[in-house]
Each structure stands twice: as C-alpha cells, then as structure tokens.
Image 1 (tube, one colour):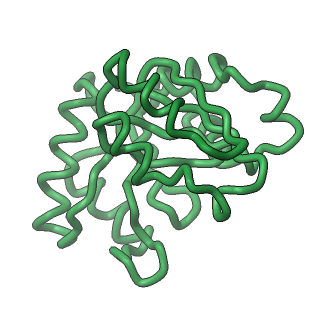
Image 2 (tube, one colour):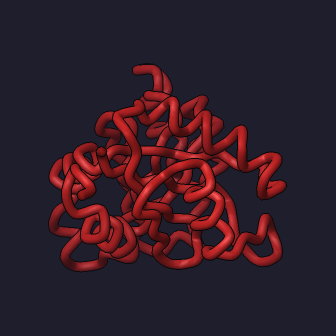
Length: 184
C-alpha cells in the first residue's frame, strides 16, 4: 500500500463549500482508503491506497464527492514520494527558511504548456517571483498573498489549468504526516 496526499480546491473559505474534516475522513474511509488523516481545515487529506495512480484517485475522489458530500471541487493527488520530491526541488530554499508563509506552492492539475509560463511571467506586475517545477508552481509573495494581483484565478487563466495553493508551512506539515511512501 502506498501513501498519497489529496488537496481539495477552494473549501472552507468563508462560507464557501464548507466541509468538516471528520466528514472528509469518513468519506475517504468509506471509499476504501486506509489510515485516513486530515491536517488543518483547508482540505488536506493523507491516506493509504493500493497501488492506484494519482490520476485515478483524483477521478475517484471527485466523482464520489459530488454525490456523497455534495461537494463539487477539484482534488489534487500526489504520492508521498512525489511530495518528498516537490519539497526537495523547491527553487526558493532561502525564502522557505526566512518567510515560509509567503512562499506558496500552487499544485497544477496538468503541466502547463511551455509558452504559457512565459505568458504568465510577462503578466506579473508586482514583486512576485514564480518558478514551475513539474506540476507545481512555487510563488514568492513578498508583500503577502492578500495584497497581490497574482491571484489563483490569474495563474489558472495564464497556465490553462486548475490550481490550488498551500503555503510552505503547510507543505512541510503535510510532508511530516505523509512520512514515508508505504503505509503499514
């Protein structure tokens, strides 16, 4: 059995798409996922599954969430091994140490086309810096996310794919919980 991380997009933001973490854990357990855990209230799920691929798990979670939870949202699934690699490949290690709350990892549904990254970079008008590694965009928000015009919607529009973001502190908390690639 392998360990996976699933991130839900745009849940528990104000009154938008509210879900209790206990309901999310029960939902995942009822689907046959094992050792199901959540972290924080923003829709972060860690679980064990037989060797299904991340894309298959995304489809399973998304289709069943619509009926079982009445929740229409995207799930972004990465294996524990993938998670370890995305932590190691952070292109901004100094910023991660100095200001981890201002480094956001944007998880992408699909890899962006080569030209879309250039278009996104050219559209940035503020002090933000962005690098893409695999299916993750690492963004530094020196003035904070709330003041930036480089929004999730702007990133999605330029890259042509759905995204969800987690700050570096949350990424590391999830890494600690996901721990190893295998669940005993």
